[in-house]
Length: 394
Image (cartoon, helix red, strand yellow):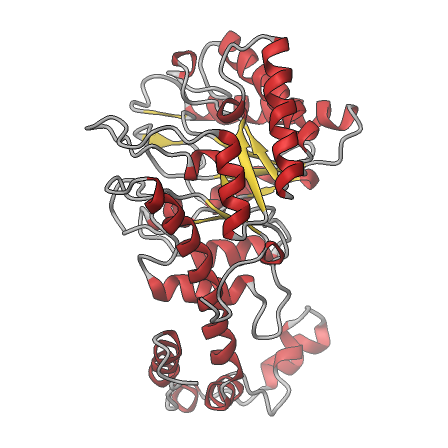
């Protein structure tokens, strides 16, 4: 449809092999869709207007494959990338599926398991580099526990740090300029996952030996599951220059990790998230890949998979257009200008302490009752946002 919302590679939209390749299985039922061959996935993503494809190591190379088999698979995949024009901006490591990770990977109590996890991550990083990835994501799916009797979580966090410090130093030693993006999640598949939110991850990064090469990969579902704000998580990461990658999907608060089509739940939250990422309001935009970590409903066949993929991308572009119109709305600008107004030049006094600024602050005629008397017109502002979101306002 020629409405301006169909995606193109310039939009930087990406999907994981595990997303469009999801076969619709869940804990209560097996797959409902046939496996889609890798080359067909690449062809269909390119046809849909995607920019790239991301992968776990074992999405591409089966666990335990020998060197010769691995090289043949990778060569064929690279040819598929060349044929379609798709790129691989991000790679990650599966440190959760195999039974060896039943007690965690980087936080497993057994040091041999931690050593195996680091070695597997090194191989996955090498694969990512070979495919052109510039970002390596670490999702600690098994980095948690069902009972704190198992270990002191301070030990687990320390082991996690040791493994990441090792991998950062090794990566630097290879001469690769990569960025590590750490992905938080509060629970599932573990009862409690260590470093449960983006805020946890940001602090953890500040304790790493090479924190400069580490950032975060927030996911809508992971922040929304416990009722937190994805917008605030992403804003915090952007404010400190640590938004290295992002996972977009849909999620209802309080449910299992649903990985729904982007924007299909909490449209208002998705609206403000897109507004943030696009840099409207005069702030810097996020310029990295816009990755959809989601999958089609179990009800769908393969045609539904591609409906899902196109829907994710179109929804993002529609929301971007709505958010742009909201920011350009004269009434919106008027309300925001009034709420931020500083006619007496007070704001500069708070930008840094000095004896003079402290004295000026103490001398300010600040009447709390007078300051409290004026409403902010946020009801109207929010209604304007809703009207733009619904397409009822130009």
